[in-house]
Length: 81
Image 1 (tube, rainbow, N blue to C red):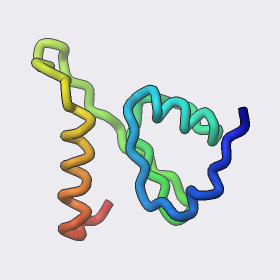
Image 2 (cartoon, rainbow, N blue to C red):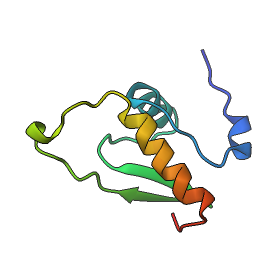
Image 3 (tube, rainbow, N blue to C red):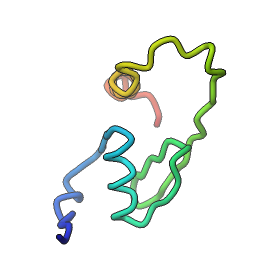
């Protein structure tokens, strides 16, 4: 099954869970799972993820939603990204 991403020119931001992000990145030829990837104006920026010790991870349920919420809160405040 082929993928049609011609609509992607209309997207400013794409958020996905780990499985969705891996699939999307493979389709586009982007490999790597660790950094946060931001593509803007034809340029790709990588932001490293700071790993926490497992004992500091109490509950990861909703972590992706919290990440997107934090990102969008800064976006609406026109903070640089």
